[in-house]
Image 1 (cartoon, rainbow, N blue to C red):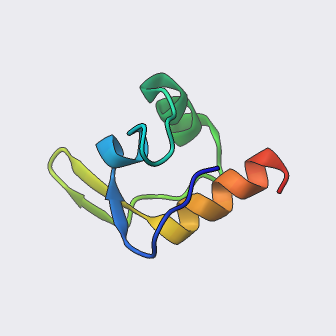
Image 2: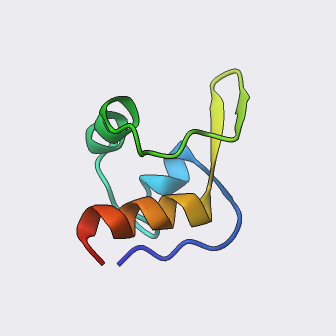
Image 3: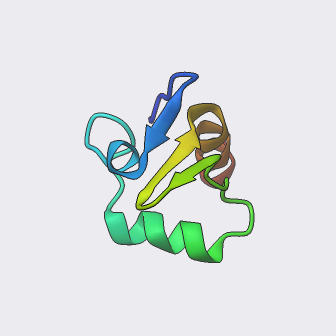
Length: 65
């Protein structure tokens, strides 16, 4: 089970083994196709940051918890 703190996460941290352990293509698929996937709250060049609480809610909803 992925446990996120109430902080911001970069894409490489979300895909990291210690956090979500999701393959990069799966993450990108969710980001592009799922309308409920949280939007990044901060975008600067190539860096995007997501809210940990919103990611946790999306994952829990997707897994049926």
